[in-house]
Image (cartoon, rainbow, N blue to C red; front, side):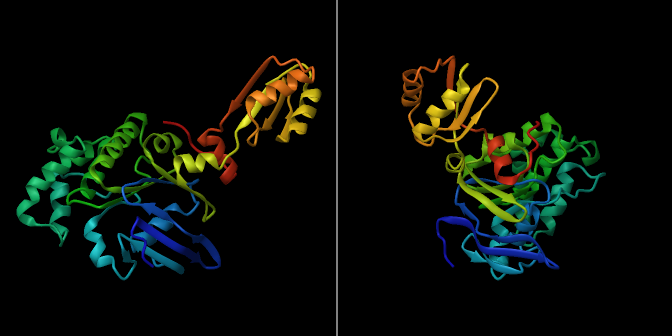
Length: 312
């Protein structure tokens, strides 16, 4: 299995817990250089998938390739090139931010001890924590703690960053800090996989999306490709909704629905000008007309059957 254009590829990836499939035959394609938003409600299988990608748990079935190496067989070769934040950082509360990073770096058998201080300073500066480097971890805000965790993942150059719910539990300011950091990392050539249930962060920073529902991948592609998989909606404001509905059905529009103010339908390729002309030609008074593309929130709800947290 070789996919030179993809930093991460899975084929039929499955994880069973007993007879229950937490991850059910998913085929991920994360292109090199992408910021891939891995989305789904809590409990949909995102973290289990990420743990399989990193070799933390074994797959029940399927194949995984990360940075051109099979997992788990190639783990020793790719781990030095992968930075990760999975299920929250674990730091010593009474040590400073710098001291915590120094401990982690010393424990990394792939890191060069002679460049440790330089790399730690660079990582702290990268996440805008150099000014707080001497402050004890227990005094850090939640946003600072998450940024320190990302700094730990950046102590050595990484080709791939895997961030599992990097803004989990953060207030709006902390979320903005982490989102801004992820966006800035994209210009440096790294591929980033970020799992989330927050639509706002994904819309603003991701180039690609994968949407998970109950362990199954229900949509995948660029943001525009995923959006294009959903139908636009035409809305006609009229005092004659039944007559308008008849005209729209005659034009071949789908999902024609009479509302209290008019009628809604899916244009399915019929030009707006043609729709309005047909309504006026049939004597239907048109008070207003608009075609709206569904929001990501609408799309997620339609794909997953669940609402998403759109706060922050």
